[in-house]
Image 1 (tube, helix red, strand yellow):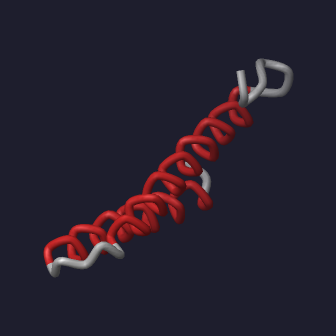
Image 2 (spheres, rainbow, N blue to C red):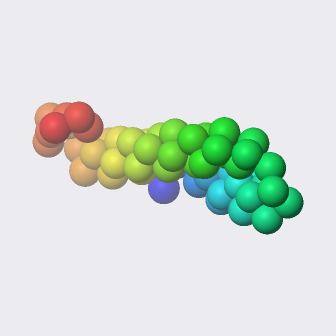
Image 3 (cartoon, rainbow, N blue to C red):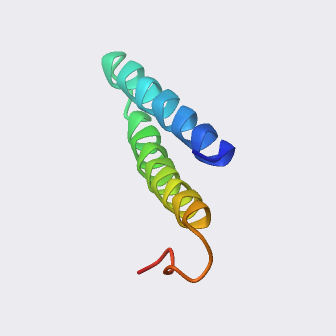
Length: 65
């Protein structure tokens, strides 16, 4: 897995933890953390898929479809 995918995965996990803490404390700011978690999970999926495509060789398909 590429390093950028690992970083975005870590940010995603931290954002989920921050959302849980926010909601437990009664703050609606947790919604922002949930949105950030969604964004970073999509980034993790994209970069992991791009890394697999790069390892399998050139011309084997695009990342987006």
